[in-house]
Length: 436
View 1 (cartoon, one colour):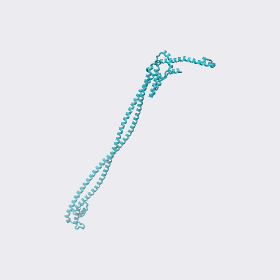
View 2: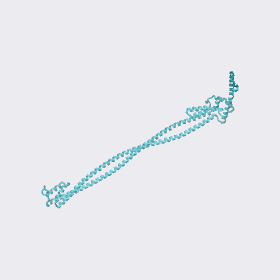
View 3: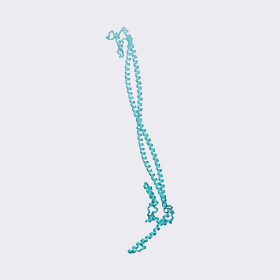
View 4: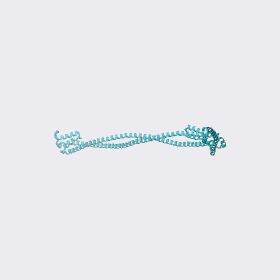
């Protein structure tokens, strides 16, 4: 366009070329001086009109954004408080439940230990009692065996003595009968009586003398005595024999009574021993069963104790983990609450910066309602000056810088994001257009 205006297609000379270049530069400068202000005024006018139509300035938009984020921050802080309250309630519930469970388990373990010890002690006592009963049973059985053997011997002796007495009494009765009848059997009967083992020695001597007297020859054979020879002597022998018969009968009766008494005593002893044995055996059986039961109780208590100890260990582990988790979450919550409070304070401070009297001096620039004619007169100069300012000189820049600094101090990503949004320049496009 510029070549067509100031020259033809024929290449000019060197001097002409230099003059043409200077002319083009001058015209470009004039055009820039005329066109650029109009473009800037038009852009600024359009931006001002758009702001006026919207009724919101850039500062107000930042304030609205900060106010919205402040509300979100407070809401997040409140929600975190509610969530932590529920978590804290859960922690308290688990802690109370597990603590109670551990205490109950400890009491149960102590009781089970005592139960097992008591059961084992009872079993030991029962074992000693059973041993004593078994010893008593053995002694009773031995005593019964000894008594039975003695009774058998006593009965055998009784039978022998009773037979001797009966035989003696019968022999004496026959001899007395023969002597009284004066039959020829007198010598044989007296010889039989003299041979009796129970017959006293003096009786044997008397019978011998009687027999010798009757034979007339003490060294010869005994003959049948004559009636006159025996008449006087036979009365004395008969009396002696009858007296011996009575004595033997009395002794036999005493022997019978002694036998009856010994038998009764034996039977009574055996009955007592039998009763004792029966009772001791029954008691031993009961105590043996009781001992087995107590040993089973001890084993059951030990097994239950082991199970309870394992459950207690699990509860202790759960309680420890829960307490650690709750402590960590509590510390995290406290840090977060401090961070949230500082974030809220930082946002409120940033809003104070934007709303302070320092911003009032820029109302004509940042607030709606300023005279449009005044804006037209000063806009170009302000925009050109704005292109050379640092962002921190603006209220938004100061607020953004404050938020960024607090974000670094607190380590808050939330404030960093707000600082980034607050730092956005609504005139960035105009500035870029002016710079370009």
